[in-house]
Length: 435
Image (cartoon, rainbow, N blue to C red; front, top):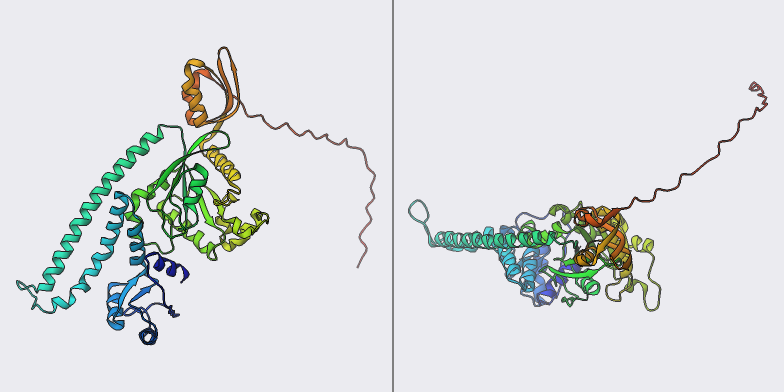
């Protein structure tokens, strides 16, 4: 309920009370039982409220019945999330995606809006009541708008795909920040890249993807993309509406999973992220886990907890923390180690090859490309050009072939074990004594 309260506060609504009920399953008609409905109604004698928010997605019938029983506006969790998204969308693409999700949510709920009008008409063949006509008109208008938005988003998708294809021509890998909403992804993006992306202590502060450059410890450049945060029970149609945005995750080389290790429901949040990544088909990518906000665990002047202790905070979800590093995006603690882990993951993904290059000064463009694509370990200059010792992705080798020597990885020295010399040994075996 704490998360629901935060969502409500995000849309500038004050929470004045909470009501809960344990049921084996929600009631088909009113979601909660008759007694609970009476309790909520009676609260109006002592607490003034004009809105009830339900922490679940209601059917159109449940919403209508609740509004009739309580005589107040009813909003379910899905509608609330859509409202938050609508307030956060800052780009044309983001606003289109939110509008599409809102329309698809509203479409099946139109019937109830016009039920009272349909009763005014006789109905039947050749005789449609005014409510029925209005309902069909609204459905038609919503359907047309949905088709139009999908067409526009398809154009956005095509544009993004062309951009990604051009980006594939560059040697710079992409790392996508993923995680539960408000885990600190935008703060981490700013810390790693020196960007100035809005980072607020609010749910869904980021809806539109933002990409910035960062430099890894070995000198290689990387693109880091901030993505929309996930949340429990995120509606499937909302994920579909944000397909163009979420594809940034699928196109990334490596995922950087940002976890708020201090959150009381951290295990559930990590499981939600794993579930959404599976739905997106991105669960097979390499992942580095940033266990964020360790400064809050350490306290003033205390040392940052060891990774083993941090994993203990995760409970059953510790197995989901792949390649974990404890960090604080706010203070900068652990960021060097995090970048080193990201670099190692990228090298493993790209199948790096140890190489030695002698590049003439006339091909300084290749030196620049090596710095961006590979990992430079040693550099020497002489009158003929530049000699570089380092590692390159296998896919880049062809570009450097005229100046290339591929080095063999040094094999470990064999362990020599001297065979013992056999000597005759006298032995006596005593018979087993009878029991």
